[in-house]
Amino acid sequence: MKFPVLRVARPSNNLTALLPFYRDGLGFQLIGQFENHAGFDGLVLGHPQAPYHLEFTHEPGKPAGGAPSPEHLLVFYLPAEAAWQATVQRLRAAGFAPTAAHNPYWDQQGLTFQDPDGYGIVLQRAAWER
Image 1: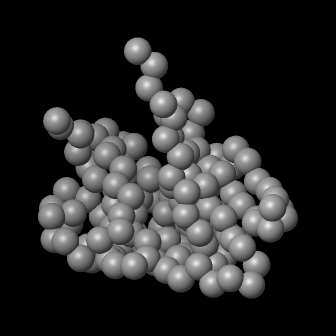
Image 2 (image 1 turned 30 degrees about the vertical axis):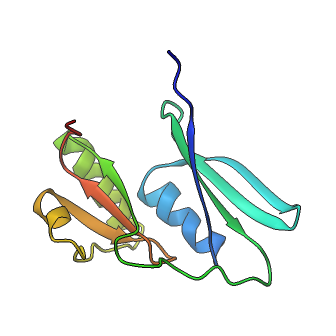
């Protein structure tokens, strides 16, 4: 059975600031970009083998706001220590520092970073267990 591809889409106030966070820090690839597409500019980032990607849009003249709460998170499970460490180092090298998670659960096995729009990104050093 084939599963659908997941696209997480959200607005942003600053696409230029988001690109280094997701591309340089998290290691995503820029797989699409558009300007003035029905009044929206946007970035699409993903990984070639992943069944998901992220789309960030900006509607000029319309403020997008930021994260509605500190619990609006994207959580990436990275069970391999080397992959987790490499991702943390890339984020730090790109100028982003970890922050304390609002929910202390995420600090037990991971680190939380805030993207330029204020959304939390958790790097969980664990495997996803059902």
